[in-house]
Image 1 (cartoon, helix red, strand yellow):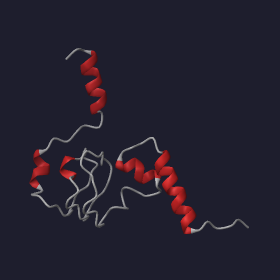
Image 2 (spheres, rainbow, N blue to C red):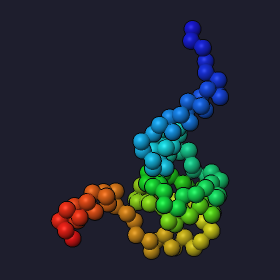
Image 3 (cartoon, rainbow, N blue to C red):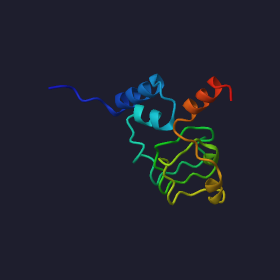
Image 4 (spheres, helix red, strand yellow):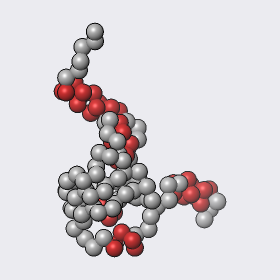
Length: 116
């Protein structure tokens, strides 16, 4: 019979996986830490978490408290779910901000190669 790992061992293992992750997106780090980005952040109090400039594509923040996070300046797309999230700004600002396509880096690279 194998010995069960303690909660501390599991937390250290998860943190180690996050630190070794080569995917620095919010979603990638959540997955590396054993969290499901489609479930783990729903309805959570994330107020004050620094999300400005972070890649939050593929994360479901349904009903989450996102006040003071700078999420309006995060990289998002159609896979970022913000339904019923709580913001400290007029959420219509999110409608006016451009949604970055998933292949934006590839598009930029091609433009540079083409000299445009």
